[in-house]
Image (cartoon, rainbow, N blue to C red; front, side, top):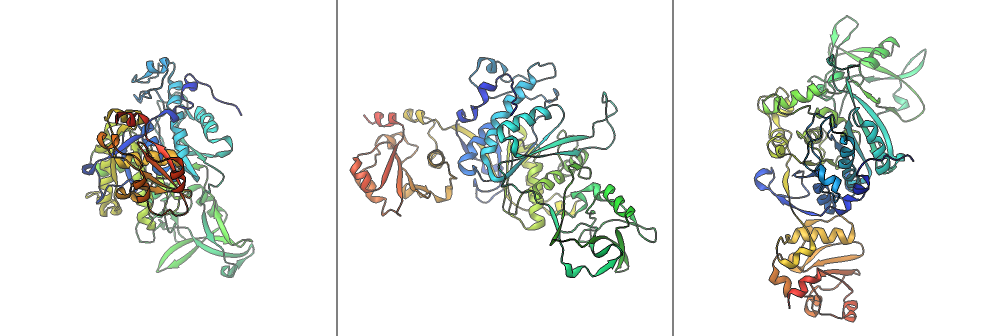
Length: 541
């Protein structure tokens, strides 16, 4: 397989492994939740590389869908390379804005993306997929980078999204109306969810010269049936008496058709539309002819003509905040909702580590509202607007937007979220000084995940018994307090070993500053001992 080479690659290939785990500090005053929890919807403010590493103990292998909208590296975005990689060349890059005149801007962008993609892959579930918005500036390089990180065999496809209509007369050669969405899966377990229409042969009671057929409504039903879900699929067609007929959603509001204009014209030309009177109104149906099989699968096209535009995203944000020009080129929630609806189930976790204006959260909440789902979002935003724009948008769509024309938003989508900021790194060697001691829960997350590679559930912690969780092989215990005197004077003793109680036919993995038990006693209690930094024990002397 061909590989992409770029300046700095040798320093960032494994940099994600060197990134320290950091504490995640809850911020009650910025949250919208009765109880702050890492298992709630999350908004995290801080460097997204550090945040992704901090999420591993809780979410490694758990995220079903990732959507990211990274800097397109146009030279006009004012982004800077900020990963503190141990390389003189890359130290020179730190904090400097990347502009069009920067001869290494493509190298810097790739160096920024590579470690993040590696951590994102670790967070994905086996049946998960990642969707990345990108344009012509880096699309071709990004394909090579993804092939290397995810494997060429896990390329699912490249969608073309028509982001605007018209304009662009200042473009040098062509009016650019599109962007790309690259799609990669973690493994072959990923399944794209196509729309399906059940076909019961007994239901094909109509017949013409072409054979038996059934009538299927052309107006969309179920999830994603609103006009705002696919604005490009809201248009009129002529009824038999030459009236303009628009699609209606099941609730009677403006809806959208199941097909776009081109497909609709083809159905009309092919005489595959049949009109029926329902409650004195014309309703169009598609004639679906019987074929062997129990369902008709409606495949999505790779060119997304009829999804919302960037203009719709801007209008959406303007309605929510009642301000214009708040954020440059926000994605429309309908676009992300479309991707999520075809790649997740009702209990999936969706991650966006370049959260921007918070569109992904709105898309998740909107979809949950439609199908009574329990999907969770995780947003990570590096910039200082994480609270004032990203989180504030989510607060407003949850509670309701008073003056919007969208009735669903006016009522509010419901939900909650916990807001976190990135705290101190967890550096085990620093425990000997007694400074920067992590909380019990944070150290528990760190040692549990480091030892097992499995998800840590803070709700399993029992501080009284020093129990932090279990796996198929181990019960795991941590003797620790963020108190240097406790650490100087605490050891795994016979009394403490006996206090662990009867084992559950599992071995016990015990973390403590030191032990006063020999190997025979450890074996008798089925204990594997893991010493916290030896320097702590030396302080006791």
